[in-house]
Length: 178
Image (cartoon, helix red, strand yellow):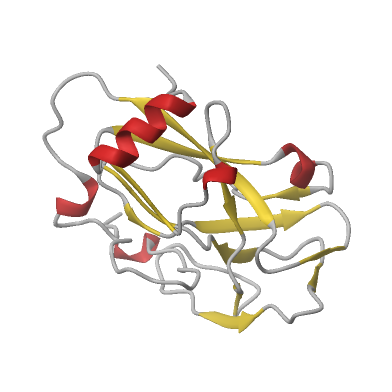
């Protein structure tokens, strides 16, 4: 079941969902709009290795915007810090962003119950496009969880993305055993 606007508000009041900063005008019928933070990152190396720590270069989006180029993976971050304690958050791009040829996540659109952080975005584009810090970039949709939760994400010993940040976070795949 997807939470409606009234159920999202109820969860916010109960502390089951946290959104900072919260803006009432961003609450939609069954979603909440999030915005692009001021930092982007790219990987230092062109060839990435899943078994190694791939370092990133973080930079601030200038006031006059930044032009994304096709063929480059950019890591972005949401302005909003979120916590979800009773539902599964899904982050989807806004249709207006998609119509500019921008994808905001390669595969990681689903959060876990207990995820408490900003969202790192895996941004790519089909043609050059100028973006700006603070622009609407996506929307969070919340699915109610049925049943008891045994392992909240923020309480798992092996959770890799728990350090609160306002900057994009690189892949931590290298911490897995395979």
